Image 1 (tube, helix red, strand yellow):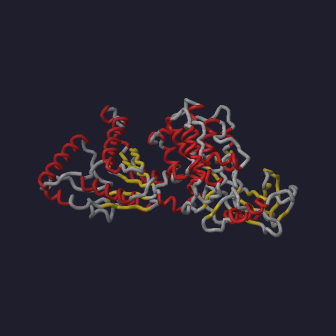
Image 2: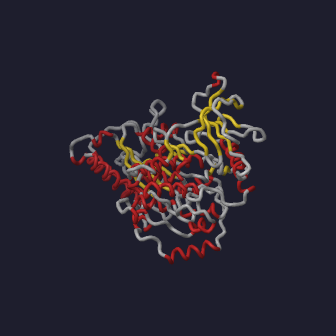
Image 3: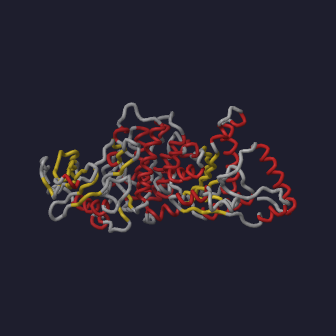
Length: 518
């Protein structure tokens, strides 16, 4: 279809200027002919190219995008407005979002710093995770299809090559070939496997590599043989090109670019977690290597790839459920062995035997603890002390195949701090100790666990203490502290004296009960 002139009317819309003319479609600014139907946001109309020389994928991708856009929702995709009849005039009208595409940062001079790269990567990962939660895999992520708003959030564009688990995959059925942008396409896409959410993680890795090095990790191959090389070849390590970049960043980027999907991040939420908490990234040989992958390794992969049969992954949402981010809220005080033991058991059950699941251990301390000039209570000292205690508690949960991280937060509102952390890090499950003290007043005063359960965006497991620790309280003749989790009451007595008294009471309880501690 030829370009439309400004002022042209089409199905109740008035065409404005053409803002993009690409190989597959033209995009125009539009508005309603009837001003009373103003949707409250700017709109854009996308019309596919359908000349004699255009390929069939233009029409097929339009059908795919029209189908998918109508069911997507959230802040990371443009809002759908209307669609035209394919037999008459095909078009899509959607929200027009202002901002810069990722190309703005890739072409920037000077290039973005490490913190900026992490921020951009985290924004992309959050957007992709929101898409995967709706059982949609983008499959054509590239800098031109990632838009960054002024507030730093990412919006994904162009769903013409996407795959939705609940709809027929028209591209796979009709074209029978690898479809995607050559520089960013994932290895499994090259051999015709579509619908794996880890393909989008590979594309994010390519864009992160571009941000770090200003070059493409695999070039821009145009032949099937050139595309297949990414099935066994690793790109040049980013620290070989730029030694000043940190090891943790190379670890993240190179993990995204693993040839086998199973070796990448299991979900975009896990990628966002590492980019938001670089100090928690576990650095392996991937992050330390500055010489590149040996020929022998590449040759072994080439042999393996020649006979490999790629299997589609589960649905995107199912893949997310199989590798959850489990968050456990560990009280910083007033927690007995019973509570801590029961929390640990509940976490172990939540992690189960699912490889790739991540555990985030969180303690919230009040701001007053680090507001004094006393060196023992300085911010650094307090955080270090509570972080060490948290790591000691989590040590028995450090199972192979699971990644564990510990975080000490500071806030005057414990419940809100836990909720903000859960939302910001896409926690799938929150494990928290149920307050067992002050039961008579809980009908009038909402405790932290109840606040968290009411406001959480995910499953919340409230944990009460379990035997044999209930017997310890009786055996201590009233000297053992009362078991409990978070509470909105309690005084801030001297922490050191309180800890000594608590340890003495626990020791007596254990001796009297003849019980070996965990």
